[in-house]
Image (cartoon, rainbow, N blue to C red; front, top):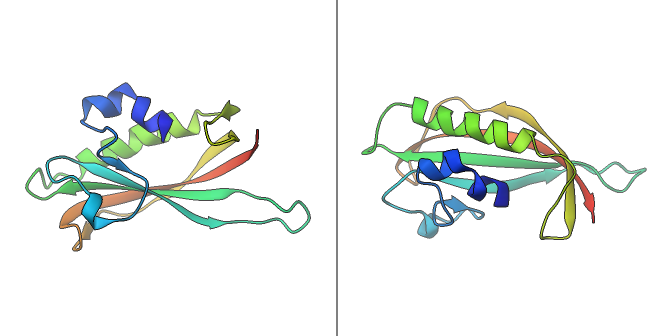
Length: 131
């Protein structure tokens, strides 16, 4: 989250702590700009090691009134890929150190009827350890 909020290219597109959301809650969404929702997915556990990678999905949303051009969403996902996959051996404020982040894949262009937005997602495999 800190890396996303600190990225100047995302800041220039209007992303800040009101539009980068860590929970999936429709009441939190901003109504005047693009926003993204970060969501931790399943955690793979290696029985021998009692740990494994976490999976992170990031959904990027754009209101239909803003644009119908999915390239805006794809531009944000490209920046996210660049920022996140370049994080290595970085200690976080939560007591964990990110060892590496690998891109796992992207969704197709989608519509979210709940949020009334166009959207797309990207997912990552996050390997970390307790600092």
